[in-house]
Length: 254
Image 1 (cartoon, rainbow, N blue to C red):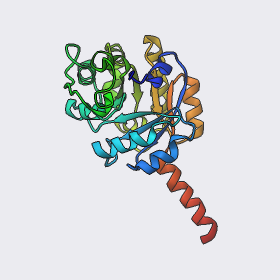
Image 2 (image 1 turned 180 degrees about the vertical axis):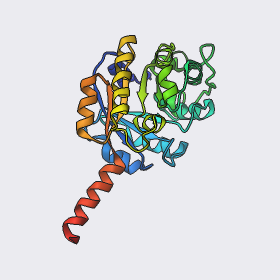
Image 3 (image 1 turned 30 degrees about the vertical axis):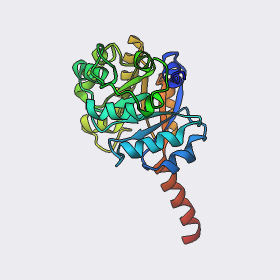
């Protein structure tokens, strides 16, 4: 059996815009519902959602055969967490709160097998189809996509150094935390924040690193794509469910 190719990694490396959905429901049924919606990627969130490894694995199983490549965000830049997520089959990882090149290098080490990294070796996991993938240990690193999240004023100052770390395949700019760091908590639309977001993508383009971002606002999403962001999440499963429920209830209750 051959190792599955990472279509998301290939697409962003080629500069093809990838439209995504944030998933925080921690539900394999929810993941299955959105799997065939037409998104290019779906982010399974383990930082701000109560996902654990078993629930993440069930959602990865539900996404098989859908249009979207799964990306998993662990709670922290922690090699043990990342190892377990990789072993259950994730090929794309978004590591939150990376502040400098040293922390980016730690993330790279966590997703790579020795001697390039420190990922623990297991002979039979879901990632290698329980031992059936030919040469998995030698090929796995080439198909893993590592994204790191920059979300503070301090990290923005280290942006080029982070982006240039070998093994970092993309940088995700976190608008909400960045807004808080810049003194505009709850207001990522503030002109200072928007200027920082535009400057960040310009700087990432200059060093040849794909940039990603999340917004629930269609106008913002189209603006970010126009600025040059390559992988853009344009909504969330919680938002779709919550707003849809609100609209339907209001039709009959007012």
